[in-house]
Length: 167
Length: 167
Image (cartoon, rainbow over all chains, first blue to last red; front, side, top):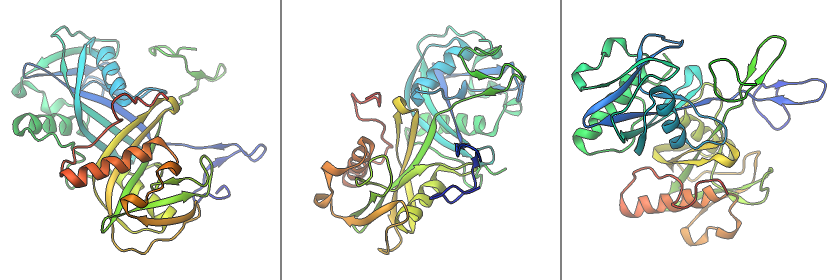
């Protein structure tokens, strides 16, 4: 039903009137650089188990986005990173996801697989397993990072033209 | 309890194992310009009823952030806006909120109070009711918009230094 003063149907308890809102989720992550090599993690969990991704995951309650991005790098790759800047805000409305992705540098080259990773690697650009990346937004983030590094233009990116995340 | 493979306590049904995750919420909004005047809305609803804000509200399911920002301007001020760029990403971790705020221009000066507004106004900078703004992030957004307009530097902003949103 549509609650009073609202304009969309919500899940409402007919006994007590409690409205159970369902909301988009925030994913936070980072492209992490170590002297020109980028940190990738091979996923140990579904979806897309076995495929490569940047460290990223759901923002937690009472957590700022840059803090969450650093936490995910620590959890998935035992990586100690310094957030440098906002790289991109991507929208994947089909799955109600907003992705807030940072550019970061590793404080050292000491990385290893966390519980959600099968392996992790620091890769040169031409070593990146492009056909085995887990999600379209991993492609976007890696390419946008490279654009920024090459041009010095770090204006945060959004979805590539023509890709509104409704695929 | 902490679900297997997780590292934080979640709300778990002891009968069926269903995990009820609670997640941060995304607020979307826009600073809307009409020939140097900015659009403000006086809130008709709590919290901060009677105080002034930029049009903003919760992102809906399956909605992109820039689409949500334009929807909020339409709902709260019957405003037709064109999103120009990402202005800022603010974190208010105390209330588990991520705010994605855009810079926009009004397509015409035709604005009026929507259901959630007592009144709306297009205001010059020195007409803005600074002491009657609803939230700190409204201050931030208006000031960051003015910085961008004056300097041409539209690199998206985040929380002002020293204000990590834990107030």
